Length: 256
Ligand SMILES: C[S@@+](CC[C@H](N)C(=O)[O-])C[C@H]1O[C@@H](n2cnc3c(N)ncnc32)[C@H](O)[C@@H]1O
Image (cartoon, rainbow, N blue to C red; front, side):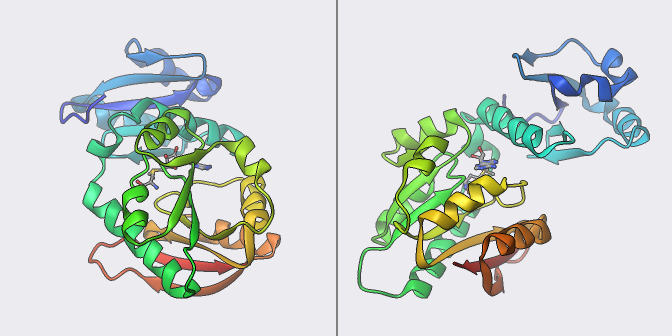
């Protein structure tokens, strides 16, 4: 579904309908639903009323890519499921919804930081955590780095795989041997709440001096991720603000 100036899209997991109270009854017929998620189109003229109603109910509604409003569930497991379903739904439009030059620049910065930090002669092995449509594949190739992708969303993985990227799902993360990856990069992903289970798997597959490098746009969720990684055994090695005006936020390097 392409972005539109005339309407917005409201997205909720089906399990959250009861939290919507009377808003649920006032919404128009859905434009999409499956067993987990429902999407309604709200005309732009009505969006202010809608926002007021969600404010009154203190619902945590996040605006994404300008035209999507996501009702954020209460548990971490459901939040993960919402993003999984949402990215599945928009996967084929993803590269039109983002400013692709911006993401390419960010991924390039993350990979360069990894290369400069690791600074050895061998071909560095990278995991792109939340690889999306696999934008990093060509950039890593130019930098002579070997890259694998991981994403929770099956259709994102499929698109990345069509670009020639080797893409892992959760079971592949479990199957990897210990100490096999030099660095993990994560571009525009760590602002989502990432499960400890995944962060522990990253710890397992990273080599002893391995690193995670992520950008935190507007520093969102930085405290949560810092704390979660610290509990697992990671230490913050360096932080750096991206140079670009209205940039990619803070780059944080965590060491194993
Ligand atoms: C904004 S996109 C970024 C994609 C890519 N890194 C880029 O810069 O273009 C976020 C990606 O993270 C994935 N994602 C969301 N939550 C995730 C999680 N908990 N673990 C792994 N991937 C996740 C989504 O499926 C989506 O592909």
